[in-house]
Length: 344
Image (cartoon, rainbow, N blue to C red; front, top):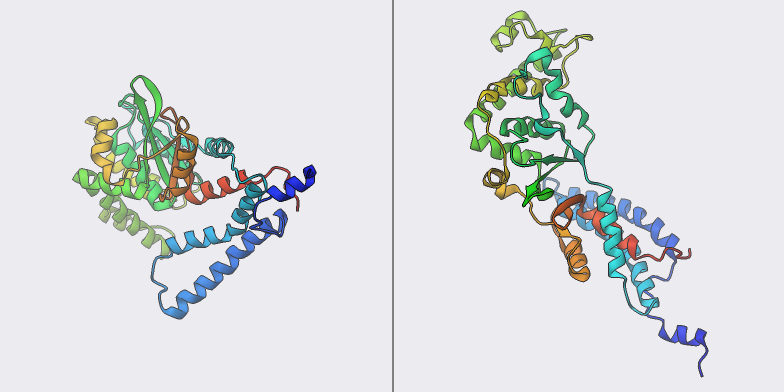
């Protein structure tokens, strides 16, 4: 009769990665650097430097994680060829739950009745300033009375110019349940759709952008724009907007400050943003797929790994719980496959 040790060896699966966990973990970032350098050199040598590198870089990230994947496959094979899909699902859900994004106060502006142009618009733009380093923001439409279109426009304009936040997630109340996931989108895409839907918003955006460009150009050639230029730009007597106290330096949020002033007239007759209106405006750019925790484990994990969007949203019975980039999902899944006590 075979001993337990012999049975274990006999049942051992193929070894996909014979070098140990530490080697795999250390090799992954090294591979990433090498592959990025090789790709950069090849692009220049082949004369395709102008070609977008998005998919190539995504493939490079995947290849750099190959040692970790092979280690995970070896561990699964050594354990009889089984993978704890449920454990991976729990780990991924927990990782996504730790990245829900920052909830934006309703309307991203003062309540109705308080002008966006008052006191230099400090109150109106406080939320925008706090979002500079945030990757994901959550806009909760609630019951359809929490947001106005022109104030979402202000948020998206600031995000598109500053590069952050990168993603806007929409939630709403549905069938009496709060916080239900509706979809996510890029701020620049939302900004474009809002301009197409309302020429008035588009006009305000172009005017504020032109004014800001004029002020910045004048600032670059002297201590401050002249009174004559300010008058020509339609900003006479508005130094409190362009150079707010106490430092009297050029406003880093000048574009958003001027846009807030430009759209303040919409407060008198605002368009409320509910789910049907959201879908009407943004369906072409709105990503509505989500991984719901109540789905079958195997199908859920397969969908997570095969999702080709830049981001993957996670829900629990429809309620939004978090969002992760595609590369973060792949990395978290691979790490969840590793045994907690893997040897070096």
